[in-house]
Image (cartoon, rainbow, N blue to C red; front, side):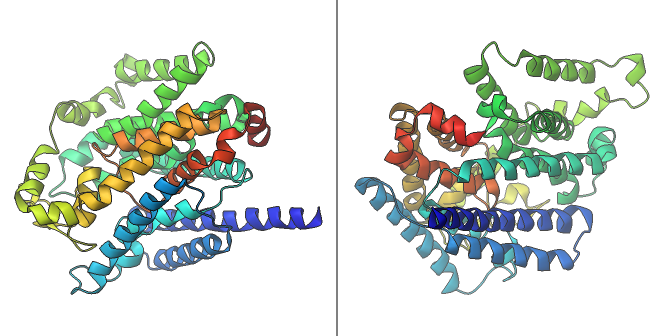
Length: 416
């Protein structure tokens, strides 16, 4: 009994180091880019976060629990990721070496799949949800810190940019990406404590409105679609108050009453109106296909791979290191050889989680796997963050026959 308790405490400790390290890394990047811009201190804290993450991962139990066929596909996927990295190491560096550490979607997108080796224990889920709650609080704080720019001056700031400015354009979508991890578990909203429910609702509203006012359609849709599907599928006629609250809030915002004339909230949707039907992807996708030959499509161009994009050269570099379309970004670096096993892993996990499981957690994770495949078109760039950690936990859980055999009562018991 003592050994069992010690083992559980050890798992909790190192799981918190793993997730806490990712959290510190993400928050450090948040401060570095948007609060204390270029503050060197936050580069140091980011390195500490990475060290904690790696240490926690190494100390956690690891075991490849996939079935034989899927195991081979997973190992092949890891191999192609390793080759993609090595092609950058053994060729002249085209990018600053600091990107190896501080760019969350440069090196790390090829390292994250190693999280699929974790032996997922039942104790993981409640602690992951607690960390998602912390992310939601950060989402609210960041939205409130920038409330003037997000909710009152969004159109003015965007329309008066001299050139493309990442600080102005990308900042309003940050709250959406910080609330999304908790959205993954919306299916257990009824099990949330009352304070977590309020935090969830407030953060959703603030994040979605901030993204919409700045015309960040994909960030708003990323959260809203997932939340709405979760509510429709799992709650049906329950939790009506949540739906009514959201609808009323949107109604107030879109109604330009006399009480709102002074702050002109309705006018702040000008950017969204302009971008609502605007095609912002086709030109870069055409540039991508025009520059990639058949060999590059199959094998990719390695971790340092770039493509020429004349359509955005005025506001960005001619040689771009990434493309917003997720599946094309994977092809850019690792080719079809990297994309296909990734999609197979997600599809097979969704299939097993939906059709061969006895509990809701597998179905929740199966839906997240399926959603991640769909989202590879409008976005879906793999990066070092908690939602990608959860994705590999979801894959491991759906692949585990042990997890799929748990009863619903057992799942609810350790989620509470």
